[in-house]
Amino acid sequence: MILKKKSLKGLKEYVPAQPVEEIIKEFRIKAKDIIKLGSNESVYGPSLKVKKAIIDNLDQINVYPVIPAELLRAISSYVKVPTKNIVVDAGIEGMLDTLGKVFIDKNDECIIPIPTFEIYEFTTRIYGGIPRFIRRDENFDIPINKLLALLNKKTKLIFLCNPNNPTGNVMPREEIESILKSTNAFVIIDEAYIEFGGNAIVPLFKKYQNLIILRTLFKAFGLAAHRVDYGIMPENLVKDFNKARLPFSINSLGVKAAMAALKDQTYLKKVVSKIKEGREYLQKNIKFKTYPSQTNFILVNVSPFSSKKVTSYLVKHGIIVRDCAFFRGMGKNFVRITVGKPEQNRKVVKRINKLYAKTYHSLLRY
Ligand SMILES: Cc1ncc(COP(=O)(O)O)c(C=O)c1O
Image (cartoon, rainbow, N blue to C red; front, side, top):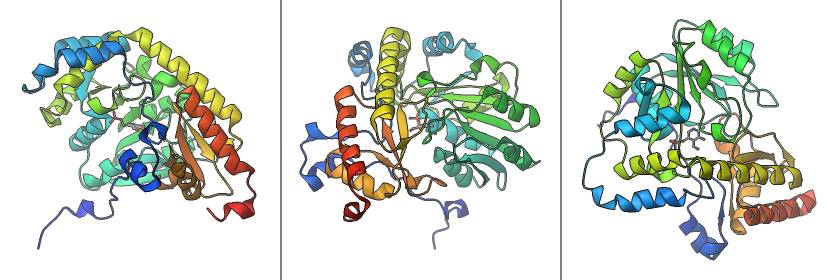
């Protein structure tokens, strides 16, 4: 008998968006006609300077990666935080895993407002912790008093995704502060989408000894495949984090790409401004109910249709979006659409509005 970890029980495998190759085969769609808006990747990709940095360093891939002081300095000047408070790891996912190792003992409690990024629950469970869920209200705001009421001696971590995935909304800074002040537990703020909107919590980081901020270069900088992201935390925690982190978790081309990306602020500004324009376009033109978003995606309530029907209808037409039924507490009527390039957004609007225009009766056939 194989004796596996008990914590594996009840864990679901992560289901990514359907791969493009499968869609090409299944629906006989040409690769060039597929619009991939299901994973919040940057549709603009990295800048030319980043691509050049990767190519120039291709012959380094035989060497194990290190975190160079130069990368820490580049992050430090971008976030205005001293290098001694910065960690680097393989994505926010990698940092969550490392933090799970640092903090979570069996039966520790972790508070997770849902619906949200699923990896918080995964991290909690895999290390034997107990997720304590708080359901967001109808506007996806967190009922802060209910959250505060859950705090107790067993609380180890509180996961706050700000802006939140998959809902796109932000949490007021006063509420974040009220949590930070009410507990010794660590509050992890995932700011994966912060370049697109919302108030960064970084200016508060010196004020609280229980604040951890996680950032990614994947969304706005277009480096999803490169797995080099950073976190900000108190100096004494940086030491523990680096003890628990896998020594070669990052990759050396990712390091070069990250440094070039952080230096190219002009490109970042351009991308963010295009995404904001696209976001507004989608919000104005999609006829289903959409929600305010400070991210590079929008949430759409496709009622009375199910998200499953809508996502499979769109994919048949080459448009990949996220069925939010996958997110705990999200229900069966929401889809998440990454903001695309203008021509992609126009196609999405046209197609989804066609669906809207159909009668309820005819739609039941899909
Ligand atoms: C809120 C949030 N955090 C983290 C991630 C993953 O980030 P990374 O690629 O840095 O692991 C995602 C990816 O979609 C996300 O939505």
